[in-house]
Image (cartoon, rainbow, N blue to C red; front, side, top):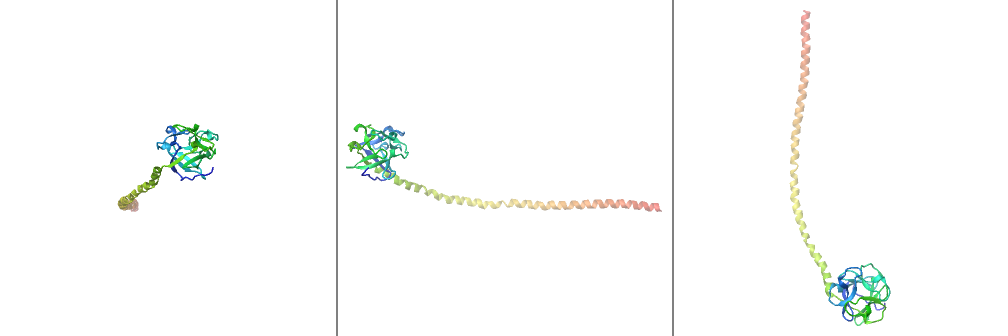
Amino acid sequence: MKNKTAMEPNTICTITTKGGKALEVGDFSQENGGNVRIWALAGGDTQQWRLEKAVDDFYKIVNLFSGKVLDIAMQSMENGAWVHQWDDISADSQLWTIEDAGRGYFKLRSKHAGKCLDLVDLGASDGTPVQIWEDVGGANQKWKITVVEAEKAPAKTKPAARATAKKPAVKKPAAKAAAKPVAKAAPAKPAAVKKPAAKKPAAKKAAAKKPAVKKAAPKTATAKAEATPAATLTKETK
C-alpha cells in the first residue's frame, strides 16, 4: 500500500494497459454485473472513467457511460475474482488506491482485498476480462492513466450558461405597470351605493300620513252618536 498517488478529484481519464488497450465496460452495458474488459482504444464514454475521491487516498472508479463503479464480483478476496461494474453502494470492494509503478504507470489496488487489478491469463487481446490478483509486479498489473482534458472544460462553462439564463428577470417591471390601471378603475363602485339612500325618505313620508286618517275617523263617529240622544230627550221633556 506504499507510494499512493493523489489524483485530482473527479478527474476524467482513460485507463490503458502497457499494450495500449483501454479498460472499458463491454457491450455498452448499463446493468449491474456488466463485464469490464480491455479493448482497442476508441475514446468513447464506455472507455472513460471518473476518479471520485472517497476517503483518505481511496477512489471510486466510475464509468462515464453507465455511471456504475468498478467493483469486485461477490466481494471476493481471492486471486482470480472477476471485476465488473455495479451500483455505488460505498463498499470497500469498490474502493481503490492508485500507486506509482514507475515510468508513468500505476497499480490499481483494492482496499477490500489488497490485490491488484490484473488481466485474466495475462491476456492482451480485445475482450480480455479483468480480475484481481496478488501483487506480482507484472506488466499485466500496470496501467497508464491519461486525463481527458476535453471533458473537463465543459464542466467549467456550465455555471456561465446558468447565469445568462437569469437575465430575463427584467420583465418583472412590466407586470407592475399593468397592475396600476386596475387600481384606478376601482373608485367607480361607490356610485352604486348612493342610489338606495334616496328611496328611504319616501317610505317614511307615506308611513307618516296614514296614522292621521285613522285618528279623525273615530272622533266623527262618536260625535254623531252623542248628538242624537240629546235631541230626543229635548222633545220628550216638552
